[in-house]
Length: 506
RNA sequence: GCGGUAGUAGCUCAGAUGGUAGAGCAUCAGCUUCCCAAGCUGAGGGUCGUGGGUUCGAUCCCCAUUUACCGCUCCA
Image 1 (cartoon, rainbow, N blue to C red):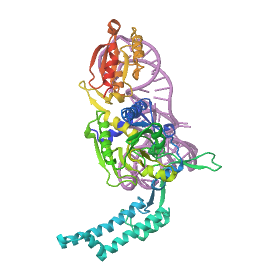
Image 2 (image 1 turned 90 degrees about the horizontal axis):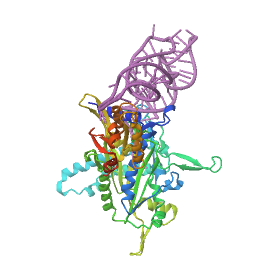
Image 3 (image 1 turned 45 degrees about the vertical axis):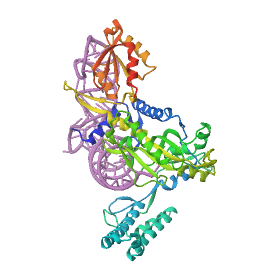
């Protein structure tokens, strides 16, 4: 029995060996945490994207799509909060060589003081019983008041120095508070350094007034800045949604775990604009709707779970992840966030343009609230792949590796295989191939024994193999082999499209 | 980014106390004509991750670098 880590490694090698995923620039040793999709990988990826797009845009009359550029006006990232919030101040302990987020160290320190207060309060509560007035106690007990004052001044100091980008003062604060490394127990700290998670480049001539441009760290902003254009031209009114798929870039300090955390990745996002006050209803609606989408792929519901956020991002008033059980454990696949009017409101402020919907009935305008569904395409790819990967021991003692990819996502839908490459069988097979290839992604192969070709198709997850044998020449029947059962049926060749089509409906 | 481990053919690996490398599978060509991988014959493919140093000579020793894995850290 392979451990899960082994399984994950096997999936990675399988992905490479069968042309799904390659390390980027591999002949130059690769580039850390960047991957390329191969001939079968790109088919699977495209199919997932298309399946998502159809279920969002095509099946919802009030959702439309856009494709925004990766480059955006620099102010977008000020308005979104990314320039300020998207960078972490890091500090290293020179003795233990451990690295920490400076703000987390300070938060932990604050938490310790808060714990102290809580202990005090709990003790008092026990002492006074029913009559205990916690609020009053907190305001009057000298020790509690003193500690609370400490917390407030630390917070004030931290926010002001961090806000002013005065990292030296953040370090000073850490030293003054006497914060020690939990591992080494020493106060031997390096300077605080900022790691901006956004990639940047210059637009225009580098010599002349070069403008710093960021590669978008999320696709969402492309939707928000187009809110007015889309609402007007598509003549929409809330509730309505805008969907987009595309690349995003994050300069992660640690990017690892194959496709799971990459520096360049693809998101599939939909921002749903609603009337303020109705956002929680829609939040719940989209949580349920998105979970339905995942399970519609035939992957068992037990592989998924919700994870509700306790700590919310600066823009959200509710947030949940849909997590998938990868071989490396349950990990985030999709986020459903209630983003309030943070983004539109902020862009309204920074741009000076009114980003509102005007309600004719009430004769007043409002900034819509936003429910976001944001799913990682590469992560979904990895989820599908890792769930599909199976090693089977067959009755005859041989083993086979099969990808049980849902037929609708399979890179190749039909393999057309002449039993042998003479006696006119290849010609007949070509004839069938030509009839099928305009509707389905097909694969023709006449090399090697038939059994070996079946196994190759199993390894890339092809749901059906059509075999042309001598009988085909007599009566135009072929055998159709099912990937999962390995069973074959003899059918008239004209019946192939209908059978395949049926398999592709969900 | 820090610490640890590792990098030999597409894959899985072998190898010598330093004398410029081998197997199986895979790939390609031909034979075989077969319904569930590994039949026969032949061929191609590696400056032993990269760069530098020590040495008469380095894939092997030393340094740097890069990539992957594990741990820490991080994931708005």
